[in-house]
Structures are given as structure tokens and as C-alpha cells.
Length: 163
Image (cartoon, rainbow, N blue to C red; front, side, top):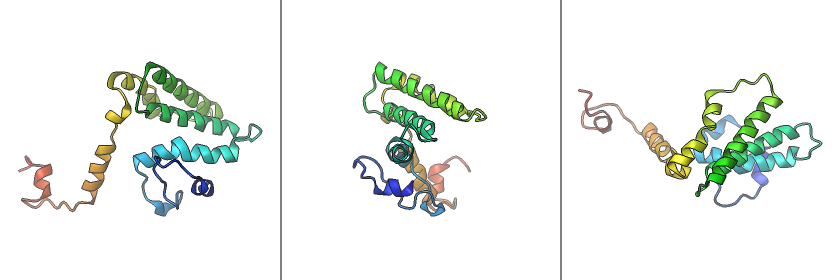
């Protein structure tokens, strides 16, 4: 699958994935790389591997496509009632097919929470206005900083009332 992904020419607006994706050394993917992977790279690779309806894994391909469609619909820059309905439809189809493929699978709270994203889109508008990418960047910078809690350094900015 890594070969399919690395050989695919992607639209320039999708975040690129590490060349060694799937190996321990590629590090953590950023949220935008995960979105890009599930919205574009993985479905394109799986279409080539399992897209044929006679493939024994075709249902898994369909399931992945419903997830990709849900992600793409939910992260659109313009939201309408039609898109919210489509998102909810795709997410229901994804979860239903997921449990059909593997009846022993236990759904988690995040699966349930995903069904409420339509309500959030309706209340707060396009996801780009309220998702957490800016916070992810700040957390990444803080994780790299050397905070040793010495007086007068960054620790005082983060915890001004600790003394």
C-alpha cells in the first residue's frame, strides 16, 4: 500500500505523507496528514487494491470510502443543511458497514461522538473555524521547549499563580 501511496500524484492542497509511512521511524502524523490520508491517499490506494467488486475485501473498501466521504463533507469550507445530512448519512453507512464486516467489533465513544458532528456544523458553521489544528501547533511547540520551572522563564508564563 505504501508503494501505491508514494506513486500516486496527489492534488497539491493535500498534506504529503512520510515516505516511510507504516514504519516505526515515520513519527507521529499531524492531524492534517491524517485527514489527507483518509480523505485521499488511503481510498485511492485501496481502490486499486480492492476496488473490484469481485475482490474479497471490496466491502472493506466501501467502508473506507464512506469514511472518506464523511471526512471530506465535514471538513468542507462551506456548510449547508444538505452537506450536514450527507455527512450524517455517510457516517451512519460507515459505522453500519463496519459492524457488519466484523460483528465482534465494539464501537467506542468516538464513534458515537462522530454522529454529533452534524449538530456542531449546524451550530458553529464550517469545521475550519473551530477545529483544533492551531492548538495542535501550539502543543507541538510547547512539547519541544525546555521548561524547567526556573523563576523568570517560560514556566512562569504558563503557571503564573503556582507560588
